[in-house]
Each structure stands twice: as structure tokens, then as C-alpha cells.
Length: 100
Image 1 (cartoon, helix red, strand yellow):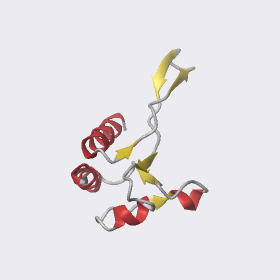
Image 2 (spheres, helix red, strand yellow; image 1 turned 30 degrees about the vertical axis):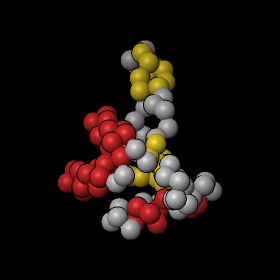
Image 3 (cartoon, rainbow, N blue to C red; image 1 turned 45 degrees about the horizontal axis):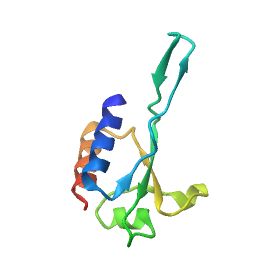
Image 4 (cartoon, rainbow, N blue to C red; image 1 turned 90 degrees about the vertical axis):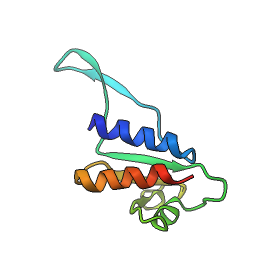
């Protein structure tokens, strides 16, 4: 999961029109250390000035996500599953990083 998050962060940075929340960490009571969290879903924000509905924008580029409005959030946000098959996730990251 760490590798997938790193790939997503790099793709969002490469595109220049997406942003992700800051990386968070928490205390692990098992290892007694601070550990970064790598959730199974990511909230991606479309920062493009002309994008009002991020899910529709991404769908037009063959990227399927869930709109933030389905979760009571702004439609400029989408929820992305980090649990897809490796080949599907790689295609997603390539498509995302190619958007400018």
C-alpha cells in the first residue's frame, strides 16, 4: 500500500492539477512507534480552475472514481480505491499523471 500511495502522490504532482491530503501518521501500540497511515481509499481534489465536477472530468479521460458529492463532500473531490489489481492501478496512475 505504501508503494501505491507513493505512485499516486507522484502522479498528482506530475499532473499539476490534482492535490491529495497531507500524509498523516499515528502511534502504533503494537510496535510502539509512529507509523504513516496508508488507507485503502484516497481523496483526490481537482484543482483545475475550469473543473467543477472532478468525477465527470476524470470519467471523460477513462478514469472511474466516486464523486465527493456521493459522500457529502464538494464535487471537486473524488474518492479513489487503492485496492484494484496491479495492472488496473498502474493504468490509473499513468492516465492521471498524463492530465495537465
